[in-house]
Amino acid sequence: MYENDWVPGAMVDPANPTINGAVTFDKQGDRVGQPWQLGIIGWFFVLLFTAVVSAARTTIRELFLISGTFGEDVLASVFFYPTTLTQLVDTVENEDARKKQNAN
Image (tube, rainbow, N blue to C red; front, top):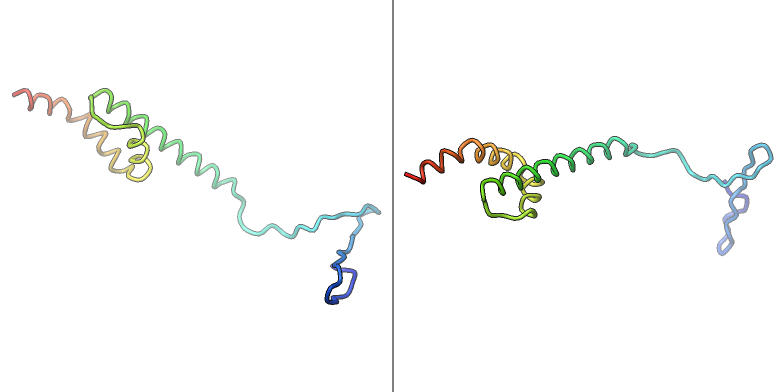
């Protein structure tokens, strides 16, 4: 791996291996760990899901005149998505019944 001896204060001179007479400086070792391609695809779908749920929550809030902000929608979609989806379904299914109940 190295051409010179290990002497205190000496400069380390790495060996220059050759392939067909050409000097190569490729000192990379074997790949360690898993490739990230699958992880990137997973994160893409997580972010896509978050965007869809956030957009749905924003749309339903605007349709039923419920106060809130887009930032709240994104945070709820990221951290509390099961509760957020349940809330959306409950709002859509029961909003007419609530309006009739409040009118009486």
